[in-house]
Image: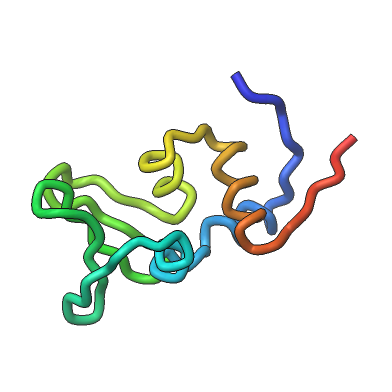
Length: 95
């Protein structure tokens, strides 16, 4: 169980709006262009990326950037928000 982190609504919105294509490329992941979207993963794990949204073609699930890192990086909600904000250069000084 993680500690409570008092994120503002703006913090959560900023984290959820993370561009997943840029995020994955910074991490060295390979993406393949597919029309106006990007594909990430192999033939058994096909994930479509468009901006901050993702969709797993075979499992029929998706969501925003927070949901992405929660699922693929196995983080809980506070960890996912912190992770995405830190990727954007944010620092935290909570009491």
